[in-house]
Image (cartoon, rainbow, N blue to C red; front, top):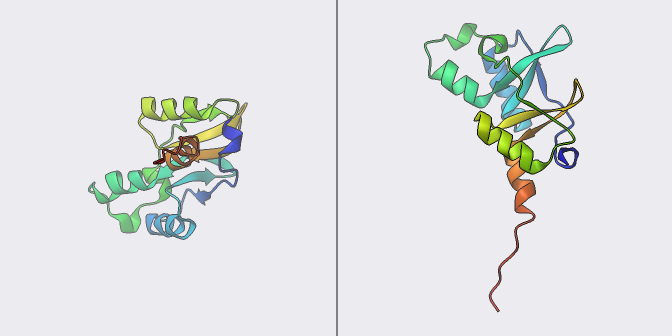
Length: 130
């Protein structure tokens, strides 16, 4: 179950936060994605990839760019009752590295590809030399 591996402490940032502030929070928290909030609601997800591809790789002046301008508005989500393998498959199908975990309509956590790989690796048999 995803409830075993998801991050329940949701990392968020206000929509009007400058990109430099977003990058700083990601660095401090050692994370690569933040939920973006406006008026108490989540309006999207902003990842380090969004910043690099759209911000640094685009023709955008990052001095005047906010989180809201670069975020992904579609929150890739999966229900908490699904398995780690289903989450892994969904990430591959969607081409994303983060999923929002929901219990019904409520966001209850997030899982990253790193979380999944660490979890799945713990089940690999250790092969030793006899």
